[in-house]
Length: 303
Image 1 (cartoon, rainbow, N blue to C red):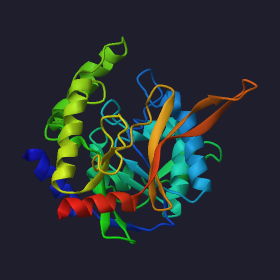
Image 2: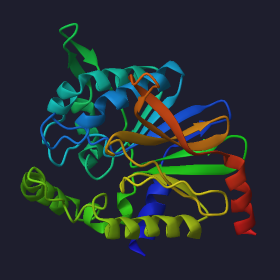
Image 3: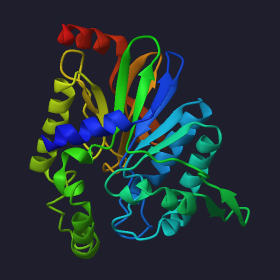
Image 4: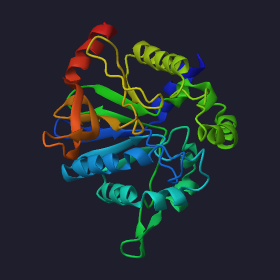
């Protein structure tokens, strides 16, 4: 009951972003950008992320970050994270400058929901290459949810992080942050996994996914989340709950693309050519599937 109420509340308060068949959108989440230390899970994939983001920037995509972009449970200050991954933040700032960047907060960066925090900590950053302060995300508004409003049919795609279906990481997030910051982070450095994390505990992960899928089915509402780090891409008739995966998979990152009126699950990874040289490549995992195909399923469910 609590999960249904929370998700419905976020849906009702989410701003709408119109899109059509000419729109290009890439949705990623759970980058968990850190300070470059041993527990910075993003560091392994930072070059893959930058290459993927550059691909989308050059092709006029809008980038939507679906929560937990920055690891602000293990790290107290975002300034160190921005300094460590300044190349990624520089590229994100270019998206934002052109009106092609939207950020949603998750549980690990829930502090961003405070407008004062985003206005001060996300306003600018120091660029080493030119030895000067540059605008980052001045006046950015960071939301708990967004709605992609499809202009070609009465269908909406609800975007949120998904921690609302995980009580430990939602209602009791301050307790969970304390545990992560002072107990599980030190233990992670010696190889012990955090059993309270939905991303690292398969049983908890499945429960969270079921709650999200049940809410989606009950409300006939397409929803894309992150949080569990496990990609989900149903075919028409199999459900309306999607998950974009994460940017901290071993050796790859995943995301969901929206273009030409369709959805697709993609993977970016280090790949090998026939001459054994390496490159960062894009692989289609699922789709593309037309959005209207899901719309027809919703219509039938409503009848």
